Amino acid sequence: MSATLDHPTLGPLQGLSFPSNTQYRGLPYAQFNGRFKEASLHDRPISSAEKPYNATQWGPLCPQVPNGIKFDFALSGAELPHEAEYKQSEEEGLNVVVTVPKGVEAGKKLPVVVWIHGGYWVVGGNSWPQYDLRNFVDLSVKQGRPVIGVAFNYRLGVLGLLADKGLESAGNYGLKDQVLGFQWLQRHIDGFGGDPNNITAFGESAGAMLLSALLQLPTPLFNRAMVMSGSATLRPSKTGQQQEALYNDVIQALGLTDSPSGKRAEELVKLSPDILISKLPPLVHVGPSIEPGFLDDVVTLNTIAGKTRPSWCHELVIGDCFHDASCFKTRVLNHPNNAQYSTDCIESVLEPAKALEIIKSYDLSPANSAEKSLVDCMELLTDLRWYLPILHTVYDDVQSPTSVSRYHFHQPNNFDSQWKGLAAHLFDITLLLQNHRDLLSEEEIGLGEDMAQRFLGFAYGNGFTSQHERVGDKKAVVVWGPNGRTRVIGDEEYDEVLRKGRGKLLRGLGWEACESLANALQFGIKK
Image (cartoon, rainbow, N blue to C red; front, side):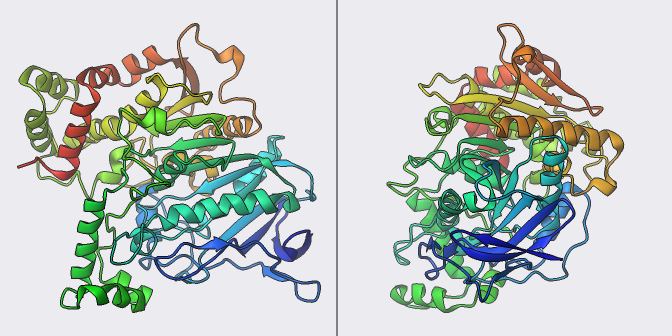
């Protein structure tokens, strides 16, 4: 069933009506101006009284590998009903979905929450069922804090991130697409009943990395941010040399090495997205690029606090899942003996006494079973790549008015999958958005609703923790799970009891040693 909104700036929009909300799908927010070129803001009416815009159908995805949704389902451990083949379009992929509670009119000034999807920077879309915001918006109404939900598509893979002098491309198009998305919101969300001055962005995994990159920009884009299981240090901005190496790999994979260097860019632009993507590795290692005036530096553990706490973002929440490195299982944690490999990496980076401390703390012994070694190494990588950036963001002394809160997710995944029993990557989003509700236990549903209640209070400007939850003079930590419980405890207790003192141990090594160790584990020992 459809419903028509007479939007004051976009024109009449025919949305899809549900019992508790109306969803407007496939709205163009940016104009595609060509491959390896910046898009421009779509800032004009898209319909007329005679011809309302049909916003009842999902817009196409930005080009990506077919069935990329399977990668995502594999991370959560359970599939949802989905389309056999999602339409893709380079020209029309820059679209947005807006989900509005029933009865909300223009000028209502509801808080707006913007979801930024993950997917290794190469897959994902706002039409995927696991990221549909309808259930979350319904839950916001049920809890008495209604919000408007928004989700943008953005360019992915080499089509959104490849940079090279020969292309006259600085990359970062996927990030700049999101910038345009927030600018579009600031101009048009009022017509849906949203408040352009009360926008909360949240993203997970690559979506969190993207959000962490946007926090480095000088331009105000949103008021609050919740950065979930990712940071600017997880996929640092590539230097010119790194981008050149990636470009050469792409040229070789596409069979363009024999073309004159001046012609390669033309060939890249001519190739259809399907052919280009099919000839590259499915999870090609793309990412943001250093670009003067946009992303100026490579963010390290030492600089993340200063770089990602801008004065224009009033409040920041950051957090992780206890086994976030589950997403590294196939690409990194795939050695015949993970414990031996990790031990070798540790001993290659640290002096003997410090190496032994780390090895003992994570119980890394080649004599342990493969299953135990996998989990132990997963916890080490999680601490290095996810937990440490949180600690540096919270504790490093920077002059910033941005308040920072944190959470940690410890609820084990109970799906019958390889992640069963682990607080695995993406399971927090599975509970928060409630799209797997029919597959969840009452305990998991209850925890998801509690997570949503806290998030919605944050979006309403009430803070992530309340005054009565303060823990003396300690920094408060929100802990979700296990056993479906939410606790607020002091930071020292959290690290000592739930992280076995490992945060203090790793911080004691120094940030450079920790980054070197993480790189050795992820990319191999330097020869």
